[in-house]
Structure formats: structure tokens, C-alpha cells
Image (cartoon, rainbow, N blue to C red; front, top):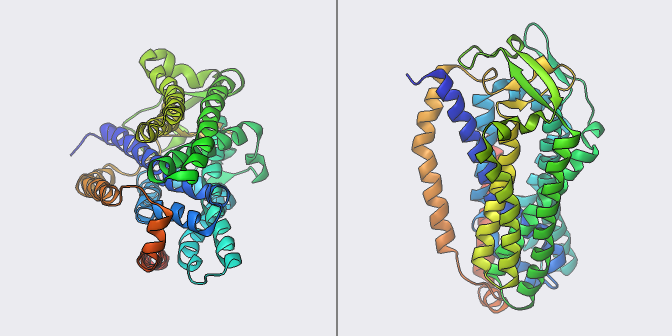
Length: 398
């Protein structure tokens, strides 16, 4: 049997990979659809934008679903605390995500302009809202959430929904949506032509610059204005009981890991540099390089708070000892090992399928292509949306 401490570390890494995968893969789709009502000046252009992501968006969403399942299975205390205390925020995310398959399916049912425009806005809401809320969630995690455990490890959340919308958390939300729009704009530059491509380039230049500047501003804010957490007297191979450790709160503590291992500063610096490189690639019309640069930027931006908070997962601002770390909130050793074996089997399959799908569906999309393949594309979008609705329906009855 694999050592318990190693399994805990492996699952921290695996959940991090899932979060990054979701941000890069599904973030690309969300970025495109967030721009849908603004860059598409007519129905044909909006259909071009939708078709760029229609074949892959459902598969990309698997990263989010798998991430939620992994948190539930590997970190049950985190799942119970976050999904109960942050209920309304997560409900809004779920409602927004449900709009996406419905809008995909119903948009092409009626050719009326008002009908399609309404569903375009539904696609926008379903793609714009989740990244903002996820960013706000990260911002609150860095500040700590007001929760505590009693002697039976029953969690109690003492905060409110509106308290989550504090200035620093909102800044994190803006960084999140800026990097998603940057990534989506780069993908549109790669896949489209003409005026639509030119408009996407203008948005990408602004979003990439905003991502770099705001992310740097957030780092400065964390160093000078956000207190971090330091855990002591913790047993990495111990049982799942967060009350058995001591936690200290101090200024600049979220930079402790970076100062102890200076090589880690490469991650946030690369997050800023990759965003600026992506902007430069857009400026000189290197769309593929821009997509890769924005993907690297997202990778580093998501990893930065994970590295800063390690080993913390969900700090508690009201009772620091109740803070959850990767060492004291995990499932049993047997559970982690079984899930690890399953992951080794199925994760490569998902990666191979995703790569194959992008390869098959690569290439430029034009208005002429959309008009010539109108019926085929309609069936494709409807089939993908219908399959997603069936999967959601089945999943709700498990």
C-alpha cells in the first residue's frame, strides 16, 4: 500500500491539475461565449463563434465535474464545508452552467433574430458568471472564510453571501474573467478570419494587458494587505482531524513558501510574462503562439495561490485552528489509493480523446463554411447539447 502521506500529496497535485485543466480547456470555451454578444455583429458571425467551441465544450466541462467529484472523494471535509457555507454562490454557478446546454440546443430551433439573440445572451451569462465567482472564491480562500468545527467535526459557516463580495475578492474575480476572455479571444484569432478575427484581436490585446497588470496588483495586495496562515504541530500522516494542529496568522505569511523555495517565484512571474508574451504574439499575428502563451499564463495564475496556500486548502478566518489543510481533511488511505489507481487508468484516456477532438476539429471557420454546412452544424450542436442534458438528468438521480 502506498504511504498515506504520499497519497495526500498526490491528491493535492491531482486536484490542482483538474483545476488548471478546467481553467485552460473550459476557460477557452467560456472566453469565446463571453464575447459572443459583442464580437458577433450578425447571426452568421455569432454562429461562427459558437461552432469554434461546439465540438469540444461538453468534453472540456468534464474537468469541472471531475474536479468536484475528486474534492468530494478525497477531501470530504472541504466538500462539506465549502458546499454548505458557499451554497448560494455555488447555486448561481450551477444555474449559469445549466444555461449553456439549453442555449446550445434551443438557439437554432427558431430562425427569428430576437429568439437567437436571447439565447446568445443566455450563453453569455452561462460563460461569464462562473469564472467571476470562481475568482471571487479564490480571493476569499486567501483571506480565510468564517467557519469552524465543533468537537464532532460538524462545520458551521458564520458568514454571508454579500460578505464574499469584498474588494480583494472582486479583484480576483476580475483577474479570472480577464484571463478567460484573453484565452478565448486568442482562440478566436486562431480559428476565424476577416473582421471577426480583427475584433477578437483588439479585445485580446486589452484583456491580456489587463490580466498581467491586475494579477501583479493582486500579488502586491496579498503581500501588504492580506494576512496568511502558518500551521504548526501537524502530523502529515495523521488522521483527518483539523482540530489537532496549531495555526498562526501573520502578515505576509502567504509568501513563506516562495521565500523558502525562491525557485517558486518563477510561477507568478511566468504568469505575468506569458500574458505579455501573448499580447505581443497577438500584435505580430502569431495566433497559435498567443493561444499557448495565454494557456501558460492561466496555468501559472491558477497555480500561484495553490502554491502560496500550501498546505492549506480552506483557511478559517473566525477560528484559525479549524482551517483545513491537505494533511488533515482527506479520506482514508484505502480510498485515496483506490481512486489513484482509477485515475491512472482513465486520465490518459480523457487526455487522448481531448487531443484527438481538437486535432479533428482544427482549422479556420468562415461565414461561407457556416452557410454551406448549415444543416450539418445544426445537428452537431443539438446533439452535443442534448447529450449533455441527458448526462445531467441521469446524474441528478444517482
